[in-house]
Image 1: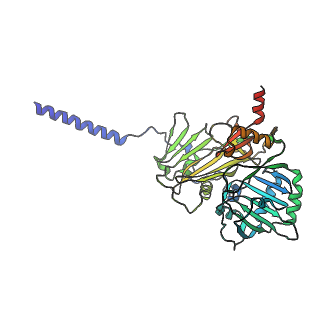
Image 2: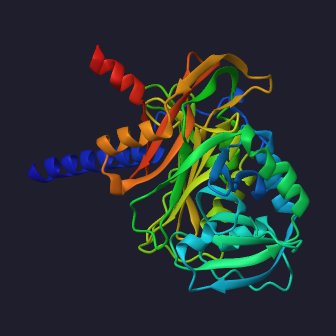
Image 3: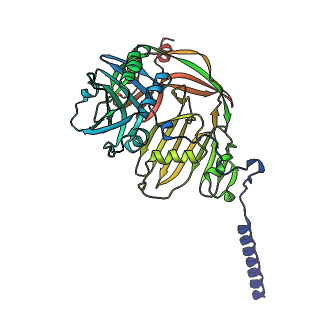
Length: 442
């Protein structure tokens, strides 16, 4: 009798084990299959493929004439004209000055200073500018401004200096930039542009960094535009190599996500922003032959291209991960969002030689002319400095910039309002001394 009971129990256990094994083998998570409406065309061009010159560009030109200084940003036609001429000019006879004095940077009676929003690696600069073929590799790691100088006298050539505030050296050379054009079209036109003064940052740079702010209050237009949503389904084929293994599911907030079991692409902020994560398992970020700017730029070009105008605004190389940030620009000024995630920048990270993270807006501004809805007066540069030094630690202040604050009023309409921004300890913050003063008075 006992043997019969044992046999019966053993039979039940074997059957139960077989059933559970079958359930495990045939179990499928409750993913939504990619519907016919979600099909995509691999390598579809969603935007333009651009050159490095289109996104690695300065955000300010400063004209020096004796004790007078005037600044232009990309809203001014003269800004583009000068920079285009510089890109086409030949640069040669470069020498490294290891014993320069800081005041020598502005020793010339007439000069134009080209200022980039972030230091540009020399290997990237060599791809942008027209250096003489016999010129050896640039001996500076990074360059954050270029100074074109008219030394006066009978010489027909202009001097050019490449400055790095992270290093204590300056590269000096010559350029065939037209001397007469330099004087007549730029130096003599400076009265038409904003008068500025120099403000020396209190950072740890090898060379004291001077930034330029307006002497008086400045006025910028407020703008509005319509936008077009970018279908996130198009990125599935661009970001996943094996589309047959990609599954779609819904997060708790009902936003769409895709995964192949390893990589993940998510749609956030009510369909306005895309994030992509590709886990790279490595203890060290191995050196790559390409600089992170080249890697990230090529990645964006090959993953749908560029919509709207973007400018390289930051990059960083660390032991575990390298990153680059390309910020949207409208009417020559950088764009920031008022709150929440930064919906106006494309960010790419690299780890162990592979792109590990990618995020970008899922909308593009329409080609129709931007509608001006009036203007706003912003306070002078000195008022911004006084306010920022009161609100922040002065030694951590890195830059001051007028930019547009973007607000999406609905899924299609976006509004751009000018505002002062301060870069503090690596991040950008809006500052409004006038509003703070009105609040105190109220």
